[in-house]
Image (tube, rainbow, N blue to C red; front, side, top):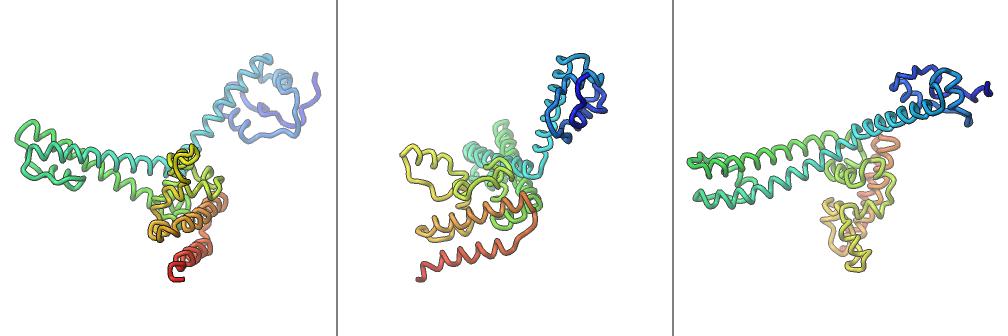
Length: 281
């Protein structure tokens, strides 16, 4: 007999064939100090020998990891990530196919406007030949993709404030979701310094800068924010830094606390007002 273990082992009270119970025990259990767990497992009747103990431990830990990954992928911030990526794909594909529709329909009909709206106009045509039917069918796909992009945007606008209230208020729901997607998740975003948040989405330009082929980028996707885009060019760097600093703080609050902090947004408003006032100085 070996000495008693320093606390209940992960396999204590677990049926050797119950993988779910083993996963829960591993995920929620702990021991005060190490022990000869394989020997204790054999003595407890959990495993016939050391090899079988390690086989069951391996199976349980793999299942626990899979469950953790599955739960993470189902989290709200991950759904925002998938949603904004799908929206971008739908918008991009709709616009690309709309060009093909305009090109094809322009050869078949007297007037064929360009763009997604032009494709929607083609949908209302009454095709008479096989080629016209295909052109109209393609236009229908464009319209469907555009509708899907609109639906995805509406989903993001509803979901983002619940997942990241401060980030969504400060950046707007779509930009908030885009920042989360670029970082890989809300937790990943909250761990990034403000300088990294400032250039998210400008990775190609940043790589070119690090390679000595271009100047350092002043901003990434946060350029779409009114506080950057509508600030005069010579002050955009300052505006981007101010915005990125507050976005980084907002992401941390959203991840660790989750409550809306109005003071944070007022501070940003005041800082941007000061930067823009330079033009009047």
